[in-house]
Image (cartoon, rainbow, N blue to C red; front, side):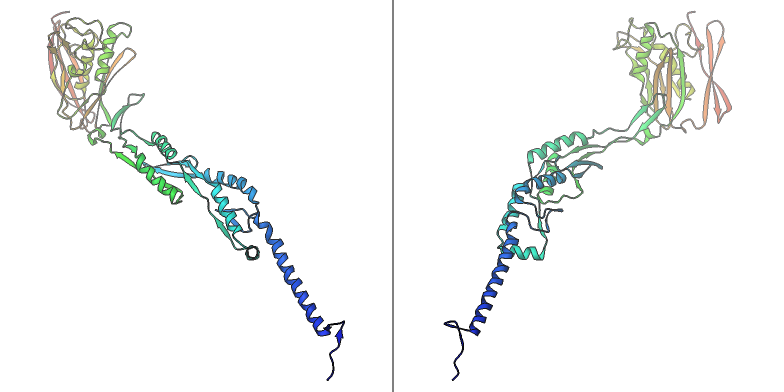
Length: 414
């Protein structure tokens, strides 16, 4: 039998080859192992590739720098605006305004623990596969701060209910302004809504808050008032004390609304004539207030309204034609001399009473159809030394229709 050739003292050639192959294999395996370890080892202290925090890429950031990076992105997120819907209005505030906070320590801990939980072979596989790693922000909020924000917001969004009203512009034109509904933010209910949104991370583009709505009232009859149907003015000296009483009486009556069928009482609004504002008052003399009653009397005549009560002065007044004056007075006993007219329209009458320089103005506003196309003018005819007969002329669509007697007035003094 042929003997195998030995190399050296104990190995055959075949055994040497096998040994060399084993050594080579060990070197290769160890080299691969060492390569993977060398490649993966840095990622025990920095973030893996293709890693996101929300929508932000944070790959290859060292763990020591995560604090700064998260602060940067947190500021961007917290400064994003959210729209709060409240009482049909939109209000834009940042999440930071709402008191939202980001806990960066929890986020860093999640990232670090995840990567350190991987063996280096798993890290290496992760590096090779480049699979996306998603981490989300950890949000928190202070309920007390959130409540304070809603209390602040309440001051911005709450609206006091305002019923419909009349407004007179600088040119003394009348407008009916529709009422505005009131609103009161419900802080407790809105706090629950915001808390649920923050806790569920439901950071949608808008969040609807809740409150209580208080419906304003509007009057369709008032809405119908749209036209100045009659007016009259008288002149006075604005530089004497008497002018004060005229202006006070005008202020007391300005804005009065007389409904259809209602009787207007001058005394109801302006009397008694010793109340706040009036000056130089005697026992029963209004000292100038009668001029305003006279202005009302003529405005009522020109509006075609029914005169219920009218008393003349003892002497003819200098500020109006004879027989077209009206006197008023109040006594210490409580008895008074009044001027009254009745609203015979199917619509309300708004009274605008005001002074411009040395002129006292009375404007009657109602609906454009209140007078049914009629207009009026007055006529004063003197009879004898102290007597006057007054007439009312009626026009239909600008065409004269009739002349009717108003009254005959006899003055007892010159």
